[in-house]
Image 1 (cartoon, rainbow, N blue to C red):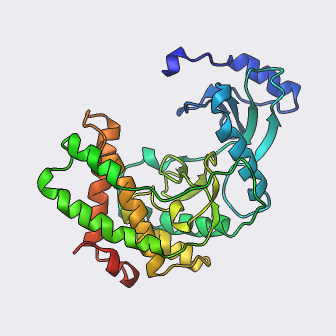
Image 2 (tube, one colour):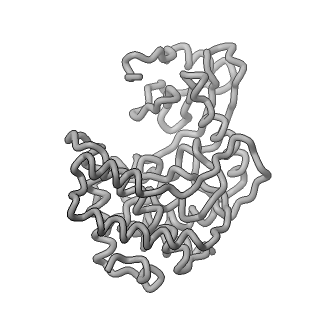
Length: 306
């Protein structure tokens, strides 16, 4: 449903609600620049963010975020704290969650210059190791992340003309090779599970500011916290991850390359419409080729295309 068609809460009503429950704000509320399909978000910069669900059938992410917040309490993960939870629906039709304000801007909004983000990538890799070391009892609202298949995306890319028939054999051969990495059983760790550049907050000085949106958190293969980011960031991410105690070997590299290849082919397979989603697929593919051309360390050697 388009944003203009949504029934969003009034900002004055939200401000009054905040004062009523003990969270008066010194500034003013404004809609967040990015609105998802499941919620309305209003922010008071430097203070807090209010997230209100707008569709009862799409509240699972809210419940997952709340479960993740309980795991993250007391950790060294740079992420906003959950300050208040109200599922009474007495003030608003949906769930209300109040969070610390997330400073910075999404990495997705920044100019793509891989060398500029090396330090940020190392810090993010260390953060990934931090939260993957956390433990939690089973929870019904956690996701169960798994590896995807590249084959349906390749079929779609062929139909859309994004992959030429003459290249089909190469894609199938390389994808099949990467799939052999999945024969190695992976450990199960706590995952953000949606760590793309829109959920990584950075400063204008190219530093890591924090990580947001834990609505897909769960337990699964450690590599599934890496594969949504641009491939040239991988060396820095892995460097920071390893330095912070993350376990990396050739099997890890293979599973990561398989997951990343699936994501890139899926993005690349979108019909070409000229919008930013179309360009994302092209940029991701070129970034992956750049990573291959950089001839990364020995753990990747077996998984690079010939």
